[in-house]
Every structure is written in structure tokens, then in C-alpha cells.
Image (cartoon, rainbow over all chains, first blue to last red; front, side):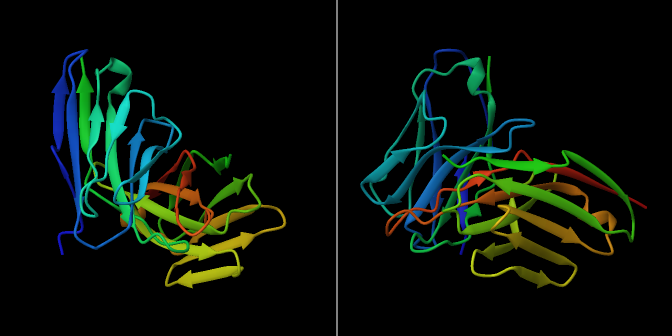
Length: 113
Length: 115
């Protein structure tokens, strides 16, 4: 199993540009989520999904969109990039039922100029 | 909503000594408490977790304790080694209806083990 994969590893954007961060998992996990990691602030939840066709907002959703058309994929879209979105983005997945360990992808480092 | 506070923000210990990191949570409905280790430039990786029906859990040199009454839980690392140097995150989660596993993370602790 590849586990949780993310692409790209690193991206530079200009203010106002849009892009999609890809996340995929091959563990048949129902639950998938996106976090951003900023220095001194831990990991903050952006959006999450409990299954195909079901998504919801996390703690810091503004400026991001998600969709979940399949169990495997959970892309994160930046609509109009801003310097405040410079961060490291992690995707994670887990089984939904009960409290289960989440497994993280390798991360995408995003720089918005 | 849930709030998780983590202390200390940095911790330096001598190799072989013990390290303790403490977290407090605000939502008494939280029932799952994982700890993650993140090495520089890498992804967070689960090292140990505990559920609210258990007071303590051990895995070799790592242990976690939970005090539900006081709403705090701690990570204990004994006989620290240089490879334990990393950022450690605590988190809390509660089961929402039949689905959901939203984790709320602490801000992290930078652990440095000096040899």
C-alpha cells in the first residue's frame, strides 16, 4: 500500500492564482481531512470528509474548497491564493467509526508571493 | 469547541533522562487522545494513543497517562536518545454521531535530546 500520497511536494504561486492540491489514499478509509501547519500553531483543520459526497468545514476553511467524488481522492482547491495561505498542507485519513488513528501524507509546501 | 493546550513549547534534556509533555483539553466529551512525532521536514507520525476508558498505556520507552477528571493527559519518554529529538503534538477527538474523527491539536513541543 502507498498509504496517503500528496502532490505536488512544493509549489510557488502568485497572489490571486488558483491551484489544486491532490491527496489520495489506498487504505479504503472513509474519513479524510486537510490540515495546514504554521510555525507555533500546530495543525489546524481546514476541511474534512466522512465519505464520498460528504464534506464539512473545519477550523480555518476560508479561501479553500474541497470535494469528495470517490473514497480514494480528496483534493483541496485554493480559489485565489493569498500570502496568508503560505503554509505546509497535510492530508490525513482514517477509518470513521469510533476514534481511530489518522495517517498523514508527506505534505505540500506552498509559498504564495 | 475543543481547545488543547500543550506545555512546554520547548524541552531540552540530557540523553538518558526522562521527558514529560503535558496537554490539557476543554471538552469533557473528548474520548481519544493521540500523540504524534514530527521530525524536521517529515509528516506527523502516530507514536501512541489512549482512549478515555484507559488511564495509562505503555509502549517500550513511551507512556501516556490520562486524567479525565482534570482533563489533562501527558506523554512520558524514558531513557531519551538523540533520535527522540523532534516536535511532539498532542491531540484530542470525540466521536460525533456515527462518523467523524476531527482532531484538535496542541501547538507542539520541540524536544531536544543532548548527547
